[in-house]
Image (cartoon, rainbow, N blue to C red; front, side, top):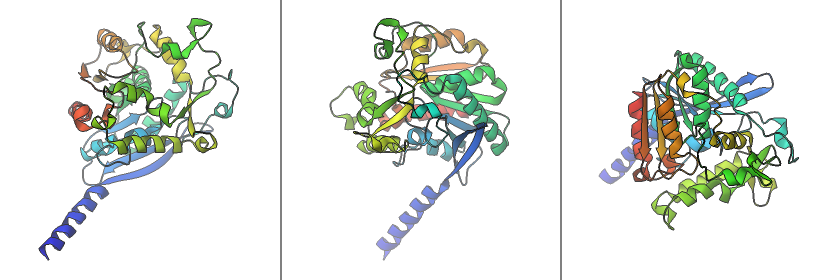
Length: 342
C-alpha cells in the first residue's frame, strides 16, 4: 500500500511540475501581409522575472531550438521556471511565420530571402507585442548565432526597448578568417558571395547537424549529447517546413540572406556598431563553436564601450551548447544567463 501511495504521489508531483510550464501560441502582424509566430512559455506559479525574447539563428525555428520536447533540454522552460516570461519568435521564412513568395522560387539567381532589415521588422513587432503582453517597458533579448547578430543590431537602434542583451556564438563585422567562407564564395571570385546561391538553402537531416558533429571531438557523440536531442532536433526541424517530405531525402528550406551577410561580415562589413549599444550586454562563446570566431569576441570587447558588458568563453562548448549534456556546457551557460538576468 505504501509503495502504491508513494508511486501516486510521485506521479502527481511530476504532473504538477510539467503543468507549471504553460505554453500559448500567438500571431502578430509585422507589416501588411506578414504574420509572425510567437510562442510564450511561463511558469504558472512564478512570474516575477523579466520578459525574455529568444531569437533563433539560421537553422530550425525558435520552438525547435529553444523549446525542444526532450525533458531537461528546453531553454525556454528553464528560464520560465526561474520566473521569467519567455517568448520565442519565428522570423518570416521560418516555422509558422509567413514565408516570403521568393521561398517558392527554384531560380538559382533569385535574391536571397530575408535580410537583416526584414528580420529586424519582425523582432521589433515581437518586442512591441511583448511590451503590451507583459506590461513591461523593456524586454531582454537572447539571440543564438545569427539571432545574436539580429538582436545586437536591433538593440543598437532601440536601446529604450531592451533591458538586457545576450549574444551566444554570434558574429560581428570584423575582417578575420572564417572557415565557412569557402562554402559561400563565388567559384570565380573568392571575394564575392556566390551569385547562384538562390533564395534559400536546403538542409537535410545530416546537414542540420554536420557542424555540430564536427565540433564534438570524439567518435561517440553520445558522450557529449543525448541522442534523443539530435533525433528530436532533426525531426522537428524538418517538420517545420511543410514541403520537406517532397524531397529525397527530406530537406527543409532555410532563407539564404543571412549567409551572404555573414560572408560580408567575415570580410569586415559592419551591419551595426556596438558603440551604439547602451544596455547591459553578455557575450558568450563556446570554444568549439564552428560559426563565430575568437576575433568576434575581441572586436565586441573593443567596441562595446558605452554598455556594461561581460564576456565569457565556455571551454569545449559547441554551437549548440545549450542542447549538449549539462556537463558539456549547458549548465554553465544556463547559470551565466540566469545570473545576468537577475
